[in-house]
Image 1 (cartoon, one colour):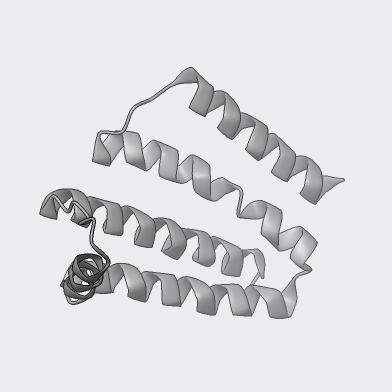
Image 2: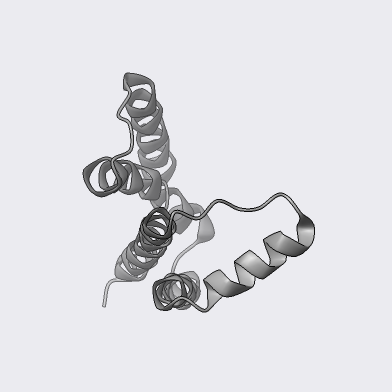
Length: 122
């Protein structure tokens, strides 16, 4: 298997985990309390939610894929490919989470992606 697929597995599970966490927090209408004890209690309760646990599992799977990628690729080759994550999250956030599209965000993402390509290719 081409080791780049390990990086894409990392990307998939990273993005999936972040999007599912944000979606669930929006669904639950979570507003983190001000007090430290209340925050801790709120966060502990959230960690017991099945979808939050799915987000954590996704982050763990992303880590396993990243370990596999690191056994086959140079960090300076693999890591710039992770710059695709913000672009994927940008599209999914707009399409599924109702987040705001702005030209500034789009231009920033284009710069990140171009930087990633330049870093990998040159």
